[in-house]
Length: 160
Image (cartoon, rainbow, N blue to C red; front, side, top):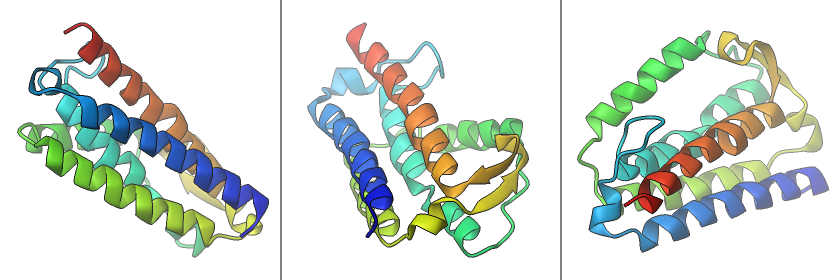
């Protein structure tokens, strides 16, 4: 394992662990608080981070294997996220934690098995403005977008 992949894996694990620790402490009342940004409950956001953001290794693997990424726009991704939120509106804390923990473990293992050069490989997707490296994919989906959702969830719970 290279230093770059080791650092990235540690950063992803740290983010996931922080989300998991927050979710574990949520009360039933916290779980149902609605966020201002997404207009989803805190529970749905937790599910979304675990089942969506931490499951991004599938797209990363397409880049690493030289396969074409799905040609999705940000509007299409947002529509899919809204659909996922609606389908999982009644998710339980246990379900969300299962996705958070399971996908944390899968993505950390995936990243630790990458080589430095894998992080620099590129794929193309309109949602990312064209070319995106494997590393940029992780940075955007987990550290930017995932953190936005996590911040939104924390704000929803704090206002309770």
